[in-house]
Amino acid sequence: MIKKRKIEVYALGQHICMSAHKARRVVDQIRGRSYEETLMILELMPYRACYPILKLVYSAAANASHNMGFNGADLIISKTEVNEGTTVKKLKPRARGRGYPIKRSTCHITIVLKNTSLDLYEEYSFI
Image (cartoon, rainbow, N blue to C red; front, side, top):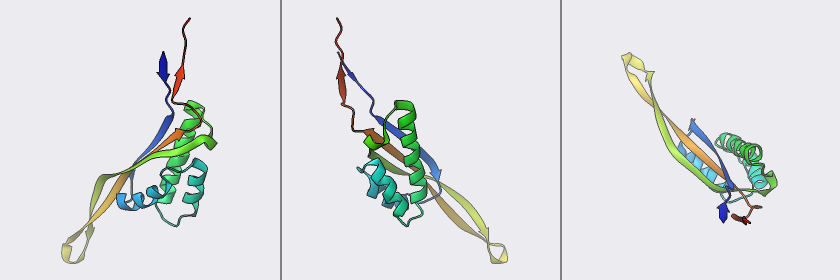
């Protein structure tokens, strides 16, 4: 019998106050890279989007080590998604009693880590 082992772990950040376009600019740089290389890239990039993405990568690695027992050296960023979230709409008071609309966009970021040291399938034999 062939049993499929789960080798992917993810972390999801919702309602992050940032436009999805700005977050995608950073996420596209780390997709497909190793975990340690990703940490170095995110710490050195000058964008504001790097900090919440760095927190998500740390969280996904913590999920991998705690829940699955994976080693951080064997992890790669297999999949990343940035989706648009809700738009927070406010009114800023202006002259003569008018209101000026302020739109604050949010995004949802998903980071999926994959363990490269495990094989996809393990065979079990029943006697």
